[in-house]
Image 1 (cartoon, rainbow, N blue to C red):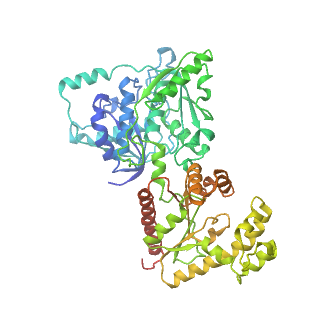
Image 2 (image 1 turned 45 degrees about the vertical axis):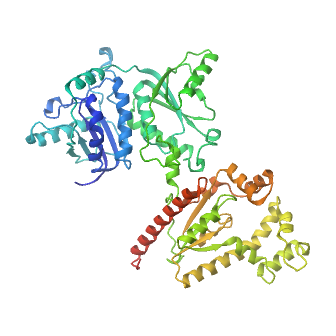
Image 3 (image 1 turned 90 degrees about the vertical axis):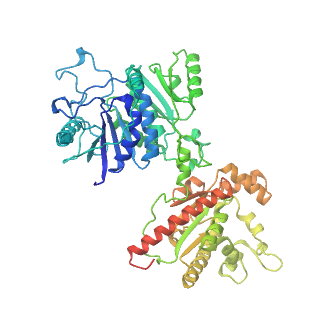
Length: 562
């Protein structure tokens, strides 16, 4: 079967049977669709008779919210590579007769709905009564989907037949009755969150909120102060990017809603001041926050919001350092050691050795990572050690430094006293620049010599361990930039413990360097030494294995032996 970038899955099974079918259906769909899978519910749709295959409003029922959660949970387990999106345009109470208009109001799609990605294939779980029906069912499915959504010309159709576990008759009847209970909906619904790297738990929260909202959906997106204590906060997507992803997702899910997305700088935002809000959607984890919102609303003379609670989605793939639930922090931790940004082509650099520029702030564990890479086979170039060489008597930089800063920086043996020199430049940007303008170019020349030496020795990979790699502009010397990051409070603790300085001095040292967030903007790969040493080793090993794959692919593309 051909693979398609985007598809629509039309689920026709009764809602009470779907929990048993979702996983095998999604697993089958993942064999055909490789990027975005839209899911459209139409329980009871008869694709065996063309006259009956038309879109109609499906009333929102209580079971639908748990089914949506179930679907995203199964999607995370069986097809985590797919961007799954549940569509809700046809999921609402049918409009009253007075509001039907000339078309009778039965069709929620007076014109096909545009989606962010054009579907190239339509799939269904519809069970054939007769194998001879397949052609008719395929035609009905294509026609039905074309009524609902704008699709690519020549839309293909595929019938999925996953094995269905059958309920006992008494259980089936009980589940069917439960699935008919109507869901209470609200005019205006609010929700808040970070919404970093939109995942299944986010989508569940958003989908159920859209299901509950009839008119307006208000979304507060955490920013600035609210991000300070997040794990790996430097890897959180910028606010505009998170908003853009939300807008795209929500525009697909239920375009009839009025959406308002606002930044949150405190835990409450407009939820405690907006009189039109009726419901707030929370998880088990954020229920207390919803209760705090209601307390503040009462203090402001506003009615309490209905708290609609959804269950957390378990993460079947979490590691010992990750949360059991699906979370953005876990996804960010899985980015460590992977290629975040492809390296720019460097025709000015030789193919070998492949040079990694490793940088990071003081206390980040950068040098320990460099030593781990050296143990795996990389030639390590310590720029701090090379920096010491530039200050030695007889070195080119030595005479220029003495001339610039005076003979009082010399020890009795005529070596440069770096502590005295440091006092002259610390806190003085102009004097510091005068020093780095002398020293950095000389260190760069020594780095180039070491790289050439590694080439002559046949070393396939070099790692340049350099705290000032980015400040000095040494990206031109390397194929990739790797950044070691650590929360500032942990870096301060390490510096104090390692160097015996005060916390104030440690903070000043960190503040004189590029912050992690700025360094990560230039990073191809990010690593973090926050956890136990074995976790760091796993990150480094993953980064090394992926690096070797990239180098091998690059050599193959150039026709050289790998």
